[in-house]
Length: 264
Ligand code: SAH
Image (cartoon, rainbow, N blue to C red; front, side, top):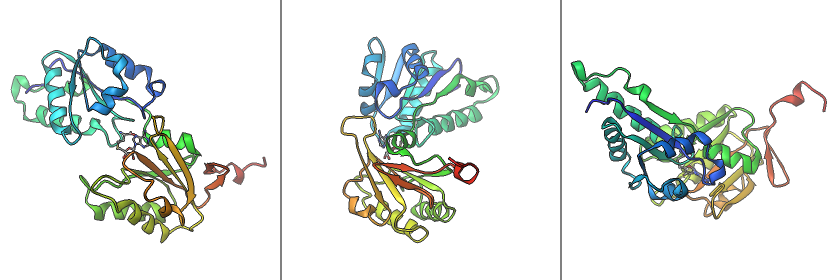
């Protein structure tokens, strides 16, 4: 399938609340003939959908969803494919671009379309790391590493290596996908690995359903984090502080380093 005259937006709609979606994301959706996404995300953008052809797709059907979006766009339609948070952070941007890249490479002669990629636009959104951090205060004001604990697409050995590396290098660590229905132990295993490198008093923030119904936040420490193992679920983002992070009331502060240079 040649990707000709393709106008495809890969849209990140933020963590959940309408006012945390960018104006560009809203415009892309309003401009589109077709909007494709899973039900949770389509519910979030319902006010923007009247008059659109809406295609609902299930979790786990990302490849089919990406192909479908590219196909509709190549037929001359304007299409938005929706991701929660930011589409480039564990979202749809990667798989859509990978499939487009493959299709361009396999198209021959007159069908080959070197500019196809430029007609696919990724619209940024507020990712869960930002959303959770804002609720917790300023936990990621210094260098941070983002790690997904989902071993559906990444081998667990690789995830463990990344956790150890980030923990040993004193990065603040943001954990996406800390649990899912079938992977209940990954969060616990991750905390154990970080404990080998970091003091038990290091702050840990857990934010569930940031900027959505049912929002809840917990501030605790590395040594107490597993007391909240049941609290952590697939709608939670966890942030583990670095050696300088501290708790102030209900908040986590990771200093940027001003104290090393200034008196205040
Ligand atoms: N593209 C998304 C991430 C998808 S991975 C983004 O940029 O945010 C799914 C994981 O993101 C969840 O398991 C959870 O860890 C995190 N997440 C997404 N939305 C969230 C929210 N509103 N509150 C807390 N965590 C969230």
